[in-house]
Length: 114
Picture: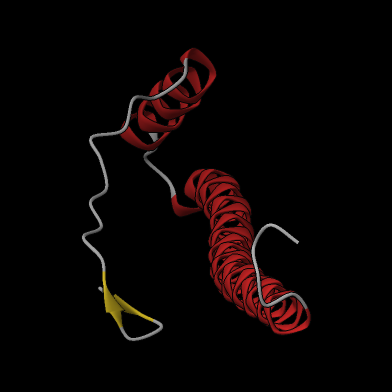
């Protein structure tokens, strides 16, 4: 999978069903298996469709949160890199100023002993 120009390996599954989900799956399977009339099948089909739509909505929300989190982390990494560069630049400037002051002091006092 490619994201922001980087390659990522994404794997999914195997997924474990919760006890509640297993129960709902068993109940719906039994209802479909025992159904002999279209009118009996409609409520089961609508129930399954509603459950599927709810899971799709939840899945989409999780994916959007994941994307937002990755973007936030990428921004944080860029900010940390910029801060590190500023710290290095500040350290270099301080070192340069220290050397200049040392040179100015050496020019005023030609002899190290005063």
